[in-house]
Image (cartoon, rainbow, N blue to C red; front, side, top):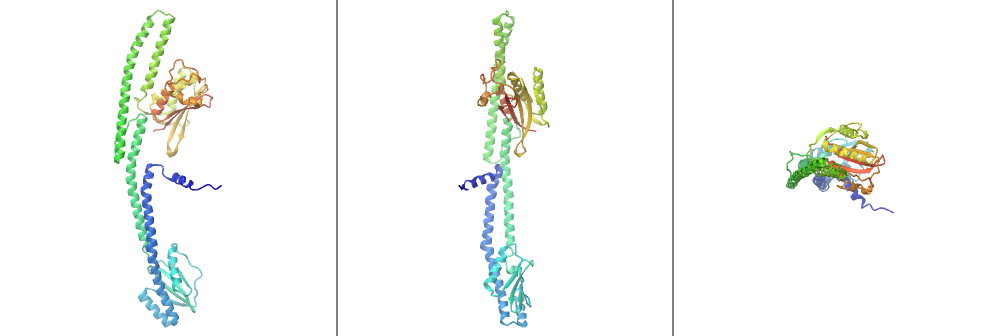
Length: 454
């Protein structure tokens, strides 16, 4: 069964179209200009140049036919001398009679076939005798030979008598105009696209918690409007974050004060079972408040700094070892540096490592560099354990705030279901993503992927 090719071509063309805005805008402007220039050039050669060349060839061949007919009417040296003198004076033709000669058997073809085709057509129409011609042997002349009785009449004619020799000037002008228009288009398009690229970079930096004080709206009116709206949105978000932080600080102060009084009163109360239970409740309340504040506050206050990846991971592993655990550490074979918020990412990694030890006996911390198209690189940090893991259908739920998958893993008596949510929020603030997968150790793999920024 033959597959229709109609559906294939649109897909093939779509794959060839540039993916960037700069490439597409350039294609939109340059392609019509190029097509127009090609159409104009084709129309010029089809309607003008070939017509002029045909007329010139017919005129030249008419003069050659006159010379041949005149010589055939009176084939004497005197007649040939008279014909040669008249042709040289009035027609700019050099005509000689070569007795005993024959026409050459081979002819070199002109690279521009239209020249030979036009001259051959005129010779066929106006000459009854065998002929031979060459338009390539001499740079400025055309060699035409006609077979007559006992010899050959050879005609050397100026090239401009057979062809319109100035056509290349028109082609050069058209090519130069196309290149000039393309260069101007590139300059203007690049300037407009650069404004969009700067807006994209500013948005990406803001998404990572960085600020770009040098960003200012410029470019076309629509791009400036988008940039101004971005700055307004950025200001509103920053204002919201400041208000939330202030509110949480006030709540933290208001709650910690009565909790501190309760701790003091319980410390002075007579020790019994009820007092111990109340002390445990107060401790859990304090821990829950710290968890809530850490989740809501985020890590927006810390400034990014360039640090070594292996050094960061070594710090996290050392912290777990000081807590009495023995995680396995596989550093990068070739260490790299990237711009991150060190404290925030360290806390997120420590949270994942300690969470792994809570459910498993073996935890491994490793990293690798992923190379992407366009020369971009991404850092992947893996925290693997050999615990019970999380079913694939519940992994996304496990990353949500306050989610506790009691049936998938042992219930964390102390936690409130914010550990993975805080880690994911921290990774996303770096422009990356936290994904859960099956670990090579048999348990859960936490995959932190963030772009490498030097």
